[in-house]
Structure formats: C-alpha cells, structure tokens
Length: 112
Image (cartoon, rainbow, N blue to C red; front, side, top):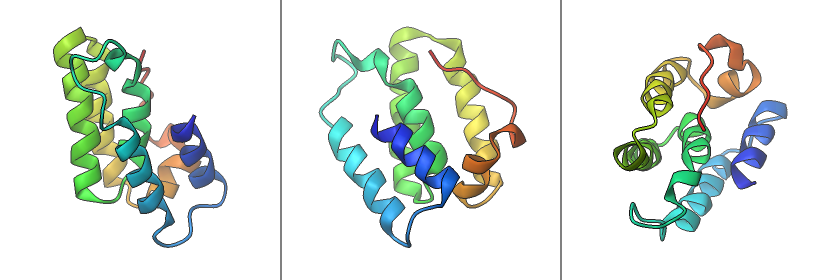
C-alpha cells in the first residue's frame, strides 16, 4: 500500500523536497525485518521495484535492488531480472517524477 501511495504521489504532484527520501526511508525500515528466510519474502518484488524506481538516493537504490536480488535467488522469478534492467533505464531518465508520470518511456515490466 505504501509503495502505491508513493508512486501515485510522485505521478500526480511530486513530493516536497526531502519528503520522498523520508517516505522511502520509512518504507525501508518497515521491510527491514523481512529476511530471505521469511515465509512472505516472495510477496514484495513489486514493492521493491516501485520504491527502487522512485529512489534518488544511491543507498536506497542499493537496498531495494538488493532485496530484489534476494527474492530472485530464492524464487528464480525471471521477471525480476527484467525488472532490474528496467531500473537502470528508469534511473537514466532522471528525476523519478518523469518515470512516475510517463511509465511508457520504459519497456513494460511485470513482476509477480
């Protein structure tokens, strides 16, 4: 739910300076207890993808892409490798508002 709210806020009007970082950090702290051995770990790839795509901070990007890689190691879901490639494209676009407002700028990816 929080990832969707972050994405929609960025798509509609953007965050106030510093607010996006704070919101992503709050979400990072929320998922921190989820380990690769948690029974629900495979449920979060979409969340990790959206938040990584919105992240402008390199440590947040590393955190959420690392989480995606952990899920891939456990599940071997091929869509995750595609998602990681799309993140590189998204980050090249610049500020996260561009991708959030125009997701068709990047080849679509489906993470399930």
